[in-house]
Length: 434
Ligand SMILES: Cc1cc2nc3c(=O)[nH]c(=O)nc-3n(C[C@H](O)[C@H](O)[C@H](O)COP(=O)(O)O)c2cc1C
Figure 1 (cartoon, rainbow, N blue to C red):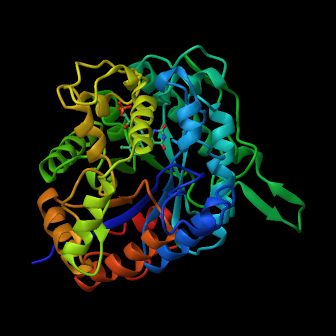
Figure 2 (figure 1 turned 180 degrees about the vertical axis):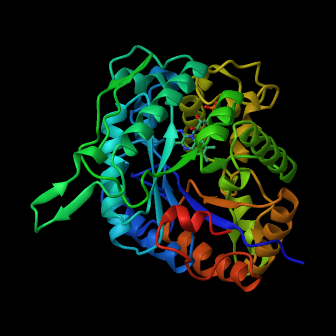
């Protein structure tokens, strides 16, 4: 018997910027990376396939962690350039009617009032289809763009994030639903007794409020989060409505979901109100052997790709990977960046590490024909207990969007595993529909 339907999201890796620019099938995307076209095409394909949401990744600096220089990052386009994702979002919601769009913004790069105001406007113009991926920052270069020498210590970033959430919630809840009266006869626009200042005075932030615009269709954006560390998970259990998680195996997915659900209950929440989507990179082709050949071919690296991977790891961890031998096990590493990623690297041979983070995202389980991969996803989701998957591909091209949205998803739908039409108008309502 099949599991109940699960949700689908898409991780738009490398944000609003170049994707598989030197690879086959990149097409016009090479020159038009600063235009919304490719993301718009993806959003339309995803809506055809009834996905819940497209999540736009972001980071806001030209990194220089690897070899102490930005050269490798710029030469290979490693997580740079990236344009402001809040500008891309309205193009995606204009091109679609039901798809949710999640935008990444960091609590250490925004003031809560500015963020609350921006997402309120995005939720208004999209008719209730906006989400916010709450991140705390990880690379010191990012902090330096905003006037600090380095990132706040890892766990303190989540304390800041906690207070940030409190302020934004107060601001989003400042206007009652019926505050805007629009009484033309008596000449009353809005009722002052239904608009409430926040008067927030905290450890990190102060904001008087109220927000300068009325309550938006969803009230507040859908909160998305991805922390893998214990403080990250505690934060997610308290605030997140959808969690995007990278877990290398079915057992780890199951364990992660069990932990989060238990913590959510501890925080007084209904665990069913949190949809945990696990990162997967299915590789789809006409036959399993053809799909496997593609995975194998992507693991054959030239020197450019080696440098690309090392620069990427360095950015995420804040550790310069140029100092390590490629064919030796990695020592114990301490990171103030993505701790959960770094924790898994100790003792692994660096060359193996960079060769697993390729086409299939290091997880070769989802490789085959649409029908074969749909069957595997079915089996795994039953084992995990539910919620769904987040599709990601760092080497994204329009070809990949079609393979997933017009190849894999119809096979999932045929098995009754994912929806064939949207139940509601709002993003949150669709996310909570099952
Ligand atoms: C699927 C996924 C997507 C993420 N997207 C972003 C992002 O767009 N921007 C960002 O700064 N961090 C991003 N992160 C990093 C997380 O916000 C978080 O910092 C990271 O998972 C490390 O967890 P920790 O902070 O609990 O140690 C992402 C992580 C995952 C697993």
